Image 1 (spheres, rainbow, N blue to C red):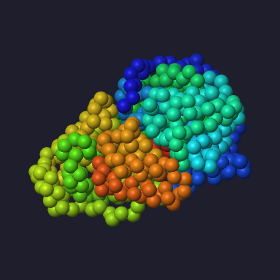
Image 2: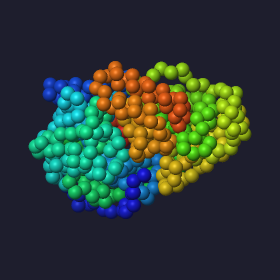
Image 3: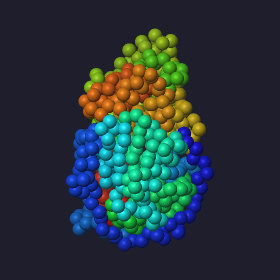
Amino acid sequence: MSDQEGESSFDLGKLGEIVNSKRVTRRRVLQGAAAAGALAALGPVASACGGSSTTDASASPSAAAGPKKGGSLQVGIIGGSAKDTADPHNAFNEPDIAIQYQLYDGLSAFDRDAQVVLHLATEITPNADATVWTARLKPGLTWHDGKPVTADDVVFSFDRIMKGGFSAATSLIGLKPGGTVKIDDQTVEFRLDKPNAVLTQGLAYRGSQLVPVGFDPKKPVGCGPFSLTSFNPGEQFVFAPFAEFWNGSPWVDDLTIIEFADDTARVNALSSGQIQAISTLPASQIKLIEATAGLKVLNSETGAWRPFTMRIDAKPYSDNRVRQAFRLIVDREQMIQQAYAGLGGIGNDMYARYDVGTPALPQRVQDLEQAKSLLKEAGYEGLTVELTTSAGALGADEVAAAQVFAEQAKGAGVTVNVNKVDSGVFWGDEYLSWPFAQDFWYTRDYLLQASQATMPGAPYNETHWKNDKWLSIVMEAFGTADDAKRNALVGEAQTIEFNEGGYILWAFRNQVDAYSDKIVGLETDKVGVPLTTFGFKDVYFA
């Protein structure tokens, strides 16, 4: 995990003074034939992922008159720690990501259907063999301090990512420091040392968002819909709307995001009217919120997943028979019902739900006798293990899932001691080192996910996965422009992980949030990031 020390509280009042409440004309996105051509050039990443996002149909009748300016929006999220950061290239937990989506933007991004769309760029197009990609900025873009967004900033951003070894670096296969080249003030080329047919996915990854030349994460300046006015890591963040945002200024006068380490406190703050929305509503509270006048549930079907993670380089999980036994312990439907109140889809230990290359392998089901047989064969009969989890870091539902697993494991003669730690410990020095733990991931296609979690050098390789045959297939897939051939390679790679990997991917979790009917603008979102990918720009008071 990258160093995040040195973060401290500060006041950005002067920066906030540049923002006013004047509504600017909303600019249209991806307009015209040029944009359509650019999207076509995205090739595989512009293909449909299935399903569609739906607008909140239960909004207050007063919303029919359209959005209106004004009001202070307060939102409660799962707690982080004193290491929370406003650096978009170093963000990884929920508070960091919530900050990230307010302050910054990228050349492209994932929309609510988890498809790549253009944001700060008017086009991103490859050459014939996908070794050079050209990106052109929208005209008239500005940073929060009023300076123009230029190609120099794009070069600085990607050199910073590559030189700093930030999480996005592994998603930009083929790009090296110095490989981002300015052509003119609005245009850059990404010159790769190997073909990358899915570079647009890496550019759309949130860790690839732009920062200005000379960026200082302690005094952050972005070009996103909000600017930061105060920052108290582990507590709360306050934002002001950015009037010059390319897609229109936010409607609210200000935004406060508050961290809650305790789920009950977060729900109580919503119920009492202290805040207007919360992320990740515990399954045990869904019926209560649905029955409470003035409160609504936002239930999004997603490709997000909350796996059990087994380190393949640590005993007993270094024996694949143990890993397979643990996957056979899980009654997936029972766990979804008990931990998620039924709001999730059954997982089959393959993590790219919407990727068309994901193979249709036989569904893995609970088989306690086979699990016991595998454990006995491996010399681990009557095994006792520790499973690390955290309500503060992952939410109460993941602790519930851990406890359900512990009960199910008894049927295979396995004793599971659930180790519940606070968020600071979970995200601390031992994060990515727990032999058996849980984690969270949002919706991604297979190759982008592999670059973040399972490839050598991946920033979040919690299973410590290493497999040379698998890596060869994955690298070939990255360089394969033909959709059918690349999808076949993805299927091969996923099959290897299905048989030998370190994840127990038992479900794809619905993202369930809650909000007051006093606000309008939150929509379902397949990406799996809470509260419409923390999309508060379009929220307004009814």
